[in-house]
Length: 284
Image (tube, rainbow, N blue to C red; front, top):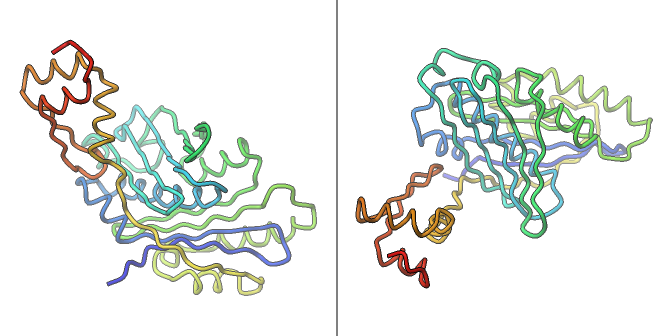
């Protein structure tokens, strides 16, 4: 059965307002099936995955967008990534007290949230996301308004099996006549329910919300779970640890086992692998 995980752009004709919609099922369940996440953590991870897809859709170049949060609360780490090819992955690290918590601030406690954009060519960019709202959508709206100076409305929803989201943006350089339609479509978008977002297809949803507007919907793009880990990347991580540390691990346990934290792929390296990695070193 074909995946129903899709990202779709749309624009409001005769205005400088653009939008995007995404709904994830298969990829969301593949990612959250990697660990026994409590419902509150699972749903926040789902919202993060949706946000990463929507935000990556606003980029004009090839690369990766990552949303990351580190906190002092029961949810210690939250991470979602999306590439320009709509390949996503994500994870959360939490302790057992997360089961009884809900809300972004209760789960994360004190801590930072950042957006990292890594283009295929060029320099990496990192922006700090304000933590003044108790919803992920609210924090990210603040980020776009303050850091990017782009008026943005963001709606994120997730339940046990599905997550979905809607993004509206006023493109840079808009003129005052767009104010009326911007206020109107924001008001209409705010009426959407979780049930509508999680169950309706894009065309039905957009027609229901904006039936009085002239909306042009572009072709849907598939979204899929894909982990970018590989044996080569894992070796590069070992190289960054250094020869001395790698040979110390080998002396203690004869092999080095590395597990990918996103997909749990396992990589095993023996002495010969490490010798080849650090050929020219004399520590062994």
